[in-house]
Image (cartoon, rainbow, N blue to C red):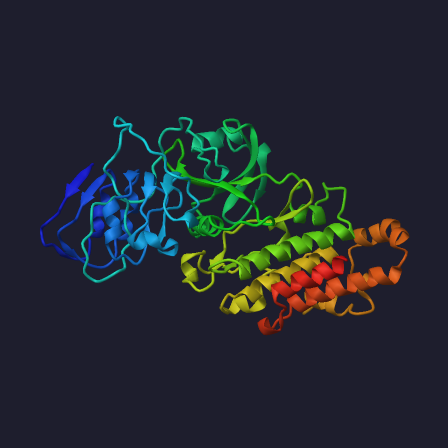
Length: 469
């Protein structure tokens, strides 16, 4: 039940005792003026609920990385020292922060003279790896504790909308089965309406924290989505890191609602009586390839999606495709194990064969997944379909039909559209067959076993654009 512990100026040495994590009610800890070394022990994760301002003096120290994620900090983010490099620190999940580097996308700070506003002299854990000897300043652990679900004052900036567990519970009618629209490896997805935010229709992905790797998946998705912008990526509205009414940890991601559902539903759901025509399929493939091109070639650092499949492609009112679910995302040029769930390398059928034997994950792996997705869109067959056995795969199935028998493997619904609608309009059967053949050939080229022989995603976008003409 200890709430305050001051061990400052005792010349203590060695590692910080992990047993301090047993003080679950601790809200103030001072270890300054000592000779501690090593890392802050992970057992301090049991300490919750910190708020206040990021101490300005922290910018004077030579930290290699500072993680202040998912607290309830407010006020201005420093811009000197470690805070001068956006890749050297994280303030993700602190919705009341302002200022800082432009790359953070935080709102500008407003001057205030409210001297009566309550502030707490609490600091977050600084993850320190700078040297073997350092002085730990006042800190408490990073994860935010639930503050009873009173309505929060939301920001008009959609990117920094703040929602509580109570609001999400209400929005989804208690996470009811009637509002459940999908389930994945690490979470359940619900449709909801945020009554406190202009009756906005949203999708709430509730993370199954009891599953191994779920917490890492949540962090990976937050890290991947916090700084990327593209018309073909699913827009994240906010995240919620709190506790439920029983005191259990609760984490959720809130996304923009896509009224036309997933690509998987359009291809395979019996409840969906309408099917995609050729033009829609080509445009969707262009959208997905454009999103990958952005992630691979126009982000710093480059991002690997690592789980490209039809259920992760969502369609808006205009049938524009948006790539979602970054729970397995990884960053090139960094320690990828810190950015994704270890041991999980995509979905069977869409992940390259070499991922199964521990091969390094690269952008060509996403290209493979895109190639399989393309072939599924054109043939209407899943890569795990029962017909694919004894060495036959979706890739080989399509490859054997090239170049003169492509219509033998094309989705029956697509052929029906071509016969009833497209051919009478275009009046050029050969041109349509060439379009089908070039598209299937592209999928085959992307899904070859050898990573070095797969197409670059930038070239894929160009080829699909040419095909669409």
